[in-house]
Image (cartoon, rainbow, N blue to C red; front, side):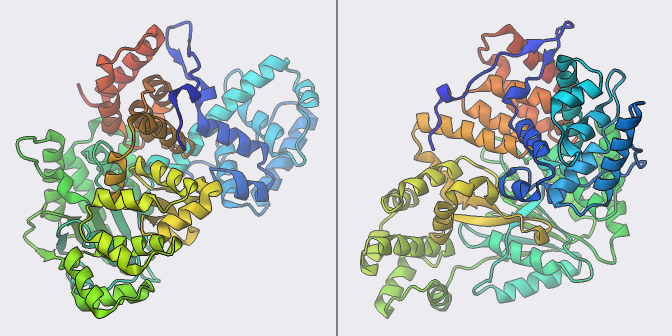
Length: 588
């Protein structure tokens, strides 16, 4: 899974006559996937089996606008063909990806010098697809002109598709699983939340706060209202800023029909004060009071000050969350320490497992221990559910090599988390190690479909309790995502050799780029010592990313590059343009 820097080819960018950078699509994996999908747009089996865009398509939401009309060229035979193509795609049964591509294509507008809609329909949406040589002659275009205009048309379609899919605003949460020993806490939490109170689940790492929160969010849904739970995980440098949270909240409320904040952010984001945003959220909550949504915030203690290091953006975000809590809406916080002391709040300290809960967990996992071994395990793990899950994983990995349960138990006795991973790696296959290393640099879940060739290795890591599945808010799409358990990810990341780590970050950047998460991809390119890749990728997609609330996150990625040595003047020029735009949006 290692990917060295030499395997990533940097293509020198060009500049327009006015000195502005020309985005280079050859390094844009999302665009490459889009072109590939368009080449097979009529083949639904191919799209389902091969396109990385397939997991994104169910969440594409076309913007409400005037219904577009059938494009025309002024050439009778072509216009008749365009009308037939339009009718066919408007009326045919389509897969989710076909639907998303068609909705984007039909909203592409003509350019003053080129008929983008006609080019797209005639090139990609005819059934069967025509050969391009005869089509170029019919359009009375030169070959180079045709390909240049088609390239621009696909770029226009891509911008619309990204805004429909909003990949940087996908709202995911861990998949709810059956709980052990938390039934009373679950019931009490739901009762308080249904009374529009603030519930804080706190306790040391590994006690199952996130798992309990996922169960609460799952039970918030009803057959009548559907899924109405907002989930936001605070991640350092990514989602721990007010800008990211505001856009995520706006997108969620927009899905529920309360669109004021979403529309305002998309038309006048530079002039949105927190007070104005709070007022719009207050109005939305009141409008939804009959079937209120649940607002869940995981890893909330990330926003607390750490010794003398106080992040000003975290201060602002804490203040904003306190204002939200005062609105008397159902809010759930999960973290190791208390973040919000709400007037109408419940603080629930999760307890460790006792002997009964541990025995139930072992039985469900098919692990048989006699009474002395169970007592020893409870003492060694102090009833921490995560450590118990790790023992189960160690037991299963030992079973591969016919080791006895007692051997796994004795080796677990004095083992740190880092030591556990070192020992466990000995029992993993080469493919499983590759996937484990790759997951350790991914700070957000990625689609399972991105791991088609490593599916068995991925399933093995899940079985060993090293990774877990997440879902997007709309579970009916079965759009599963995968991530390592946070505590394990940090330990595994610490063990990566620097050279391997650099290559893995570049590979992670490519995964996020394929999914249209361009800001996240840029961050990993920087961590992978490829700042030029980050600069040109984000420059090509900055407007789409800005409209998804990535301004503050991007500023944190690109501002430090001012002091990095960029040898090419064109890279420095592109970085300057990016920062000028971000400073403008940040009011600096």
